[in-house]
Length: 438
Ligand code: SDX
Image 1 (spheres, protein in one colour):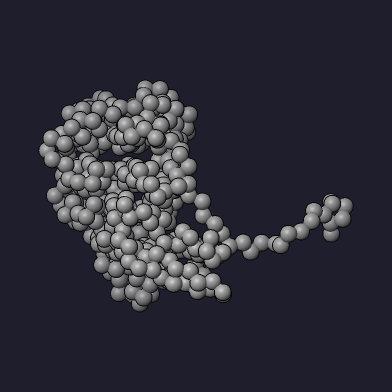
Image 2 (spheres, protein in one colour):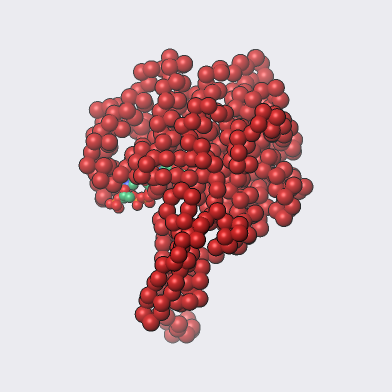
C-alpha cells in the first residue's frame, strides 16, 4: 500500500506457505478496526487466489469516511458517533461532513446549503420521463430509470477526471434526489408534481413536494420533519455495503456519476438490503397481531422454511444496530406527535423484538433488529406508502454513495474492479456435431 497517500500504518508482514511457495504479505494497521494483509502480489508470487464469496473478510478499499464496529454496535461518520449526530446535527450538515471530512463552520454551511438549494429543481423535460412509466410502477424502478437518465441532461458534469464537474454532479444528485423521489410518489398518485421552494430546508422541502397539493396551503409539521431528517442521517452512509460497493465498482470503470448512483439504487432495492424496510413492514402486517408472533419466530428458525425475520440480522452488526436504537426513538416521537400510541404494528414489532432477543436461536446467531426493523412503522406513520420506503433510503444514502464514489476516484490505489474466481467447470473439450450428440 502506498503509505504516502494512505492513512494505514505498515505493521510488519504475515508469512503464507502453500506447497513449495512461501509468500510475505505486508500488514497494515487501521486507525480503527482490524488490520489488513495486502494480498495484491499473492497471485503473482504464489499462483493462488483467495476465496471470499460475499467478501466477509475482504477489504475492497481504504476509506476515511465511515467506520462500523459490529461487536460494539458503533457507527462513526468521519469519527463522529451516529447517536451524537442524530441528536445535535441535521441531514444537510451530515452531508457536508461526509463529503468534506469535517463539520462545517457557519459560513461554510450557509454556502453549502445555498448550493444544494440551487440544484433542487430538475430539467423540465425530465417530467416527460415519468409519463413513460405506468402509474403503478414501483418508485424504485422509476428512480433507477430517471437517475440513470440524468447523464442525458447534465452533460456538463459527467467528466469524472474534472474535479469541478465531480463536485457539481455530487451536489446535483444530493439536491435532486428528494425532487425525483417526490415526483415518483406524486406520479403514482396521479397528482401534479410540486416544485421545490427555496426558503424551505432540505427535508421540509421534500415533505412539501410529497404531501402538498395545489388546492391548499401545506404546512410542514416541524416535529415530523425533524424525525424524517434524523432518519435521513441514520441512512446516510454505512461503509462498503452492497449498494456502495456497486457504486464503487461501477465508478471504477469510469462510468459517469449518474450511472453509478443509478446502479446503487438498483442494488439497494433488494429485500436483503435496502428493500428490507418495505419487507419488514409487510412482514409485520402479515403477522398482524401479537398472538401470532411465536408462529413467525418459529418459521424464521425453521431451516426448511425460507422465511426470515425482515429487519433482523446484519452482516457486520453482531450486536444491536446503533441506528435501530435511534430509529426506535424516532418511531415513538412520530407516533406520539400523531397520537398513534397504540399503533398495532408497533405492538407487534415490540413483541417480536422481545421474543427474538430472548430466543437462543437469535442469541446464538447474534441476530438483532437492524435499522430497517423500525423504519417502516415510522415512515408509514409519516404518511408514506410501503413502496416508497426504499426510495427514501436511496434519497438518504445518495450522499454516502457520492462521498464513497469521490473517494474511490481520488484514491491512487484504485483501478478497475475485476475479481477472479475458482473455476470448477468442465475441463477443455472439443465441439460435438449435432448429429453425433446423444
Ligand atoms: C441493510 O451491509 C450494510 O451495511 C447494509 C445496511 C446499510 O446501511 O447499507 O445496514 C442496510 O441492508 C440492513 C440489513 C437489512 N436486511 C434484512 O433485514 C433482511 C433480513 N436479514 C438477513 O437476510 C441477513 O441477516 C442479512 C442479509 C442482513 C445478513 O446476512 P449474512 O451476514 O450473510 O448472514 P447469513 O445470511 O449468513 O446468516 C447467518 C445465519 C444463517 O443461519 P445458518 O445458515 O448459519 O444456520 O443467521 C440466519 C441465517 O439463516 N439469519 C436469519 C436472519 N438473518 C440471518 N435467520 C432468521 N431471520 C433473519 N433475519
